[in-house]
Length: 124
Image (tube, rainbow, N blue to C red; front, top):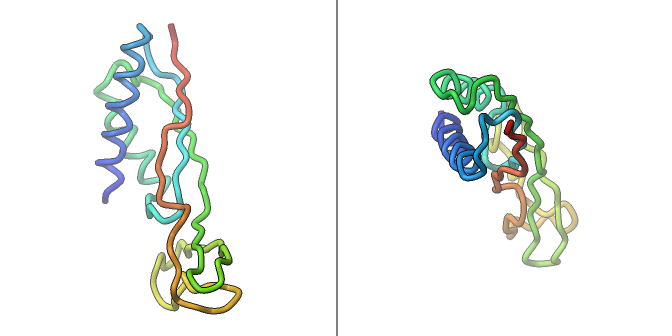
């Protein structure tokens, strides 16, 4: 479960940012997470709740997650293909990274691996 480590990193960054701005607490955290991170939203939220319980700066914080699609670019025809990751069987089975236009397996990931804190709402 890599969600716990990610949740801890988010907490550390948010606390540092809130303290830098002399905030009383963090109210809301807005995250943008790519499909290829394989981070499961519910697990991440549960992990974050566990961390927040022992951290006054994060008491009552709400975590908002926006997903960014995975996109690959074909090295043969330069077509960009949006990849849909199955929640039942992520990244297994057929070559989901193949180009939808020319069917080439020679693709590179150009979007979907990112995980960013987009915004924080703090209480002053």
